Amino acid sequence: MRRPSPPPGVPMTTPRLPEDDGAPDDPGERPYAHRPRPGPDPWDRPRGARTPPPRGGPVFNAIPGVVLGLCAVILVGQLLDTLSAGGTYHRLSLWLGALATGDLRQQFPTPPLGGLTPYVLHVFVHAGWLHAAINTMALLAFGAAAARPFGRGWRAAAGFLAFFFAAAIGGAVLHQLVFANEASYMVGASTAVSGVLAGAGWASGGRAGMMQLALPWLAVNMLLALLGLAFFLPIAWAGHVGGLAVGVFFYPAFVAAFRRRRF
Image 1 (spheres, helix red, strand yellow):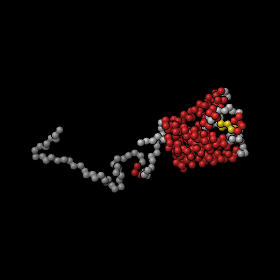
Image 2 (cartoon, rainbow, N blue to C red):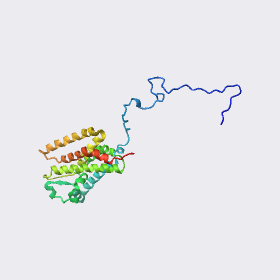
Image 3 (cartoon, one colour):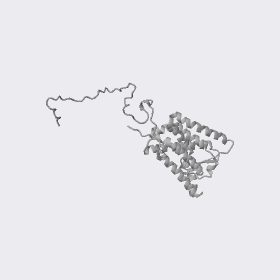
Image 4 (cartoon, rainbow, N blue to C red):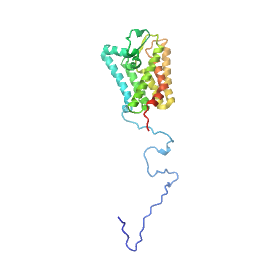
């Protein structure tokens, strides 16, 4: 469409806009000061600083499904053990999951796979509801942080499970070595949870964050070991230390191996 011509004798003019060279009128003014934005001024944020995640929302939305699944299996197993009242399920769980040491090994039937199943399945057997509740709460607290660096999807879930059971095996092996000549048996997820605790520290603050959680927990278990020389303490401190060691030395390797790579 053509622009209509002005009447004869009237010059054609074009309105001029104020000149804008792109610079602010005030040298101290931000380039976008004419467009106020809510929240803190991004120009004042240090370079490289990360914006904190938004707060709010259901707390269980932040916990990965693999962690919730492990907690569910622990609680369901304890419920079945309670309903069994010392019956078939109770005997089956001890056979498959109780890690016996010393002379007590002669009183337990040999578990499947040459006696190897307790090294893994002891995490699903507990000595009562209080024992199961403590380990479940600890797994929820530390597992949420330790599982996130693996990412999402089946590969991430498999990676966290591999790390979880590696810590359990490490704790079981050290317990077996320390108490080889003492009649006892070990059950509970605290071996694996000790490794998860170290992983949560690494996920939150790298090696320094890991040490902030791992060293106090190591000190607590060393104190339990000393007290165990004078008093009977039904606490598998060696299992805790073994699981913690796996977390400290191998958690970053598990994350690197299973983390989802983005191209």
